Image 1 (cartoon, rainbow, N blue to C red):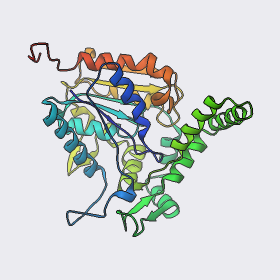
Image 2: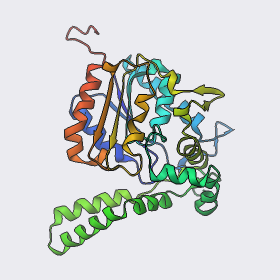
Image 3: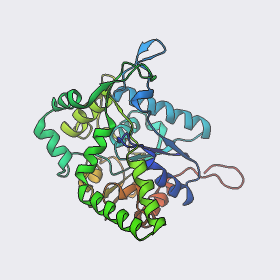
Image 4: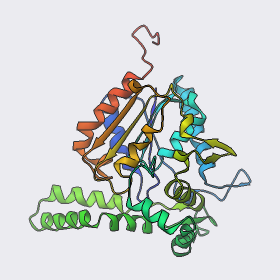
Length: 323
């Protein structure tokens, strides 16, 4: 089975998923794929002569196409792994197309945004569903003629990353103080590590208008997937319809201020179709970024996920007979 790691559209460049994918590969999940969404600059306004909308419906269709392609290559359904934001969409894909999912799992994902208090969801609900239009009026822009996405309305990733800075300001100040000290005392290796991190952190991608609007309204304001009101292509997609034959795992961080631990694992309580033996819930002593980049978290917690996935995998013996 492929293990397909879906990276988030997160403002900064989403190779955030690579450390998780590489670690899982080294632990024995040797058939790995990483899925990353294009920056809005690079997505044409018209595809095959038709107006292209990058909304939840289109995302689900893309996910299905990717997973069908990998199943065609391997002959088996894939292990689905969502890093942060793709969680609800990837679960929706598993619900609609269970034949494409061997397992489903998520780390730091806003799966059930009513299961725990969090600044982002509290703020979104206080401001209401139309606040996203205010953000577009302030931080939206139409892509210029020098890019493939000419004419597409997008949300500026730089302002999104600024929000992450504000949420984690205390941590970033600590990092900058450490960098300054390392430079003064010529601890070049430590300084270079911080510099590399912030070069990545500040390399932004922009969001298509439809995607950011759907994410804000459907997930953070209305919690539609968990509440059973999400509609994709005119059909309902409900957690209560999650396929019982697809094992599920979830990971949350105790210090996560983006998707608090309760939001990241709370959906497991809503899903009753999966036997207890096919469920795994993990809470780590980590913040949001630590769930994907901390060496300690990778070493101490992700082996549990890898063991879970290997136990659920379609294995092939030495005689090339699948079992």
